Image (cartoon, rainbow, N blue to C red; front, side, top):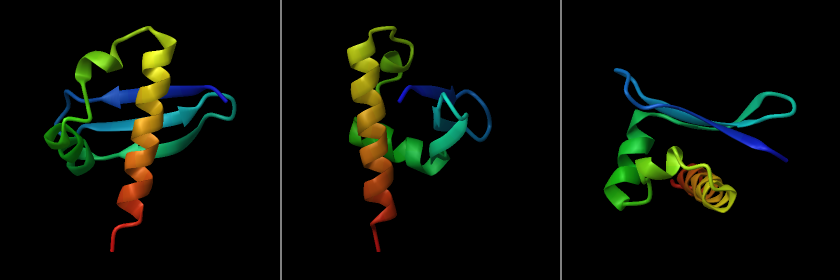
Length: 75
């Protein structure tokens, strides 16, 4: 699978979504609160979003998926 990171961080209501490129469906969506939590934890480096290295982006997508799933499991 190939994923696309669609990040709009400089708007009044920032968001980041991970899209499965083939069917074009959104796999994960991070809203303003989730992005702020990631920044507070130090798990979101904005420089990584503009990187073109496949291994860096693969690790970023993996960590974003894990964050979304861990958030969904919270009571």
